[in-house]
Image 1 (cartoon, rainbow over the protein chains, first blue to last red):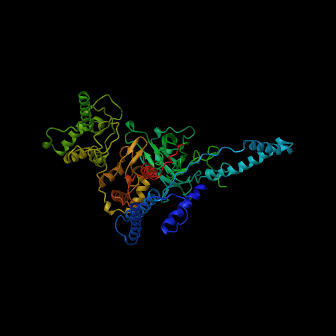
Image 2 (image 1 turned 45 degrees about the vertical axis):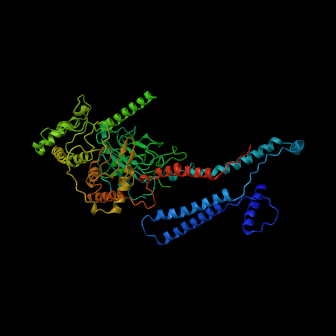
Image 3 (image 1 turned 60 degrees about the vertical axis):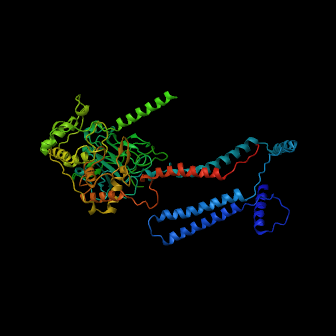
Length: 330
Length: 266
C-alpha cells in the first residue's frame, strides 16, 4: 500500500514538475536538475523514433537483399533505444529514496492463544469424530482422483485398440511408395527400402516398414522367427520405438571384418537396432526392440506379410507390453 | 626466474615440434623410380603393388582375414577384394583421398590427394582391369530438377547427411559433409556406398533422379539464409545454444546493469 502511494506521489511529482502545478508542500525532496540527462533522453527517444520509421520504410520499399535483417535491426534498435531511454529516466531523472521496514512484533500474544482455544472448543458438538474425519477423507480423496483422472489421456491404458491395431495381416502384399508390389529379387544387399501395406492407409503409424537384405548365414533371429526372413530379406517397422521418428539411416559395412555391423539407426536420438538379431536395441534411448514383420515370398516372387509385427509399433504408452499388435478390425 | 623462462621456452618448443610432427602427413605414397618411362598400364600395376596390395591383396583379391604379414608403411593388411568394383569405386576412393588409408581400421575420410593426375588415372585403370565393373559415371546436374532433388534428398540422404548436406554422425561413424564433393564424386558415392553408407542401384534411384539430387546438393552449397545467421546450418541445437549461452547471458548482464541492490543493513 505504502509503496503504491509513494509511486503515485512520484508520478504526480514528475507530472507536476512538467506542468508546473506543484504548489502544495513537497513530500519528495527536490532533486537537482540534470539538463544533460534530459538532453540525452530526448536524443535517445528521437533516435528510437527514427529507427521505428526506418522499419516502416524498409517494410514498404524493400525488395533489396537481406531485407529481413534490416527490418530486424530497425525494429530491434528502436526497442533497444526506447529501453535505454527508460533506464536513463529511472536512473538519472526520477528522484528516488530508499525505505526499509522491519517485520512488526506480534501484538497481543495472549489473544492469539485465546483464539486457538475458541477454535478447539467450537468442535465440541462432534461426537463421532473419526467417522466425520473418514467422510472428509473419502470426499477429498475422490476429488483428488477426479483431478488426476485426465492424465489417462496420456495413453489409453484401458483401451489401447487404436495403438495396437496395424494394417498388416497374413498375405498382405508390400508395395513401394508408388504402389508397385515389391519383388523379392529386386531387394539388394547393402541398401534399404521403404514399403507400405497394399490398399491400406499409409498414415497409420504401423504402415511403413523398412526392408533390408542380409546374408541368411549372418542372421541371429530370436527363437520362433526361423521363417520370418526368406532369402535373408527382413522387414521392420520404420517407426522408432523411442519417440516415433522414421528410421531413416541404414548403416552397412563395406568390409565387415574391420567395420561396424549393419544397423538401422534413428536420426533423432541415435537409437540403433540390429537387423540381424530381430531388431534388438544396440544403443540409444529406445526401450523396446524394433518390431519385425514376418515375410513370405509368393509364387509370383512378391513380398507378402506372413503375419503381424513381433511387438507393438511406435513409441511406448501405458501398458504397451500388455498386448501384442491387433490385426482384426473392431 | 631465468630458469622458469628457459623451461617455458623449452615447453613451447616441444609443443611446436609435436604439432608439426602431428600435422605431418603419413610418409605418403610409394612411387616407382622410373615413372616417366612406364606405360600407363605398368605404372598402375606398380602403384597398386606399392600402395594398395598390402590390404587389397595381389591382383585385388582382397585379404579377408587378419594375417600376420605387414605390408607397405608397416600396415597389417586386411581389406576387401577389388575385383569387379570398376573404375567408379576406384575414382571415388582415390580422388577424395579416402584411399590409401594409413590404418585399415580407420574410417576413410576426405584428405589431401597424394597421387598426381597421371597416377590417378593409371591406378583407376588398373583397378578397373581387375574385373568387369561399372565405369566412371557422368552425371548432368544441370538437367536435374531442384524440387525433385530436394524431395529425394530428404527421403534418401538427409537422415544422415542433414538437409543442407552438412554431414553429422551415425552411431560408430562420422557422416561427411557433401559440399566439397564434385558432381562426379557424389554420383559415384551414391552407387558405391563407401564405408557405412548404403548403396543405391539405378533401379532404386535412376540416373535422372540422381541428376536432381546432385542439382539440389549444388544449390545447398550456397543456401539462402533468408532468416538471418545460418549458424552452420546444422539445425536447432546450435541455435538453441546461441539463445542460451549468448542471448540469455547478455540479458542477465543487462538486468544486473540496470537494476540496483537495496543498500540496507538487513
